[in-house]
Image (cartoon, rainbow, N blue to C red; front, side, top):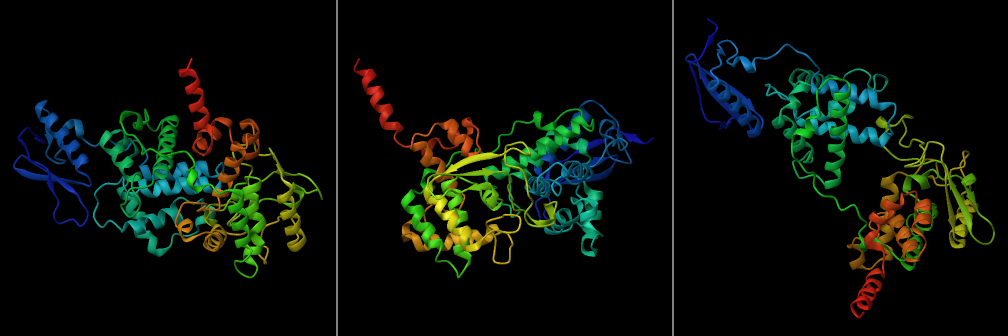
Length: 454
């Protein structure tokens, strides 16, 4: 006889011999003690609950596996989470921008090492993330041969990864959500980071349903709220025109040539509300710069920066269409005479690259985000008081774009026109910049006073 009803289940206990927290479930079947270790207490409790329900129902326990008939391991019917994650990345690669590929990968760097069985000889998490980032999630033509130092980690992941169908268990999908809520060092992740990673997991599960790998999206079965993100611009970051001019003057003083080459690029972010990647992609042929009066920029392309492993070109910058627009769509931005003069001076001094690009190093390379961020930090130190330097005021170059849109709103420019120039939807514009619109409170108070006096 290969089954028995003689079962005794003990309480869960913490595994004292493990360096990382784990929990042991112990039970006795037919006089022989059994045990199973889980990484989280929730998983252990779920397993114990299943064992107790089986005993209450009078199910026979298999003497070989130690499990009741309802928990007997079925034949392998689908991919592991690791396998599905790799196929998901391969399918999405062609149609995704470099930064999207990076976002998907970093979500999976949290998820894949968390959704595994408790197998022995687990490699360090740093090694697991390295083999995922540098090999497993890259297309065949990018990754080459598996390096010797990654072979053990890759083999362990293939053996330990949970079946994709295990995510239908609430305890397992919750462990996935717990994983994306933390940074790699164990600290709580920023709200926007958690939301981005959760969006990747949600899309993966929807793809699994579409491909009939799962009967339903397991995220719908659990109640879990991501941390709340502000979603609005902090008005403390917004600089005024006088402060902008002081900052641009300070940029000219940074370095021998690096700062002066960036003045017009930073000016693009303020006077035309360009995103950094849009300024990076700006060409001479995009600029109508008359000797007098207003000019016009007609944006065609952006050049976002990402790690070389994620770009199509293998360089740090890929040329892309404009954000939130069709591939060949353009955006027209009228620019004031002051900015026209800045661009004319830049072109006269540094000319343009062969393809028309305006902003590049002396060797013709695009400026990296780390390079222009370093120049910006030094410019703030030169232009601001000590109190302003430690404040959020224009802490990042991107805050120049926020300052531009805030200025236009407070000047009374219609939101539809601002949205067109900035490349926003009107609803997004008003929601994101709601706190930066000045003078509304006094007008509202006056209107309410008049109503009360009627």
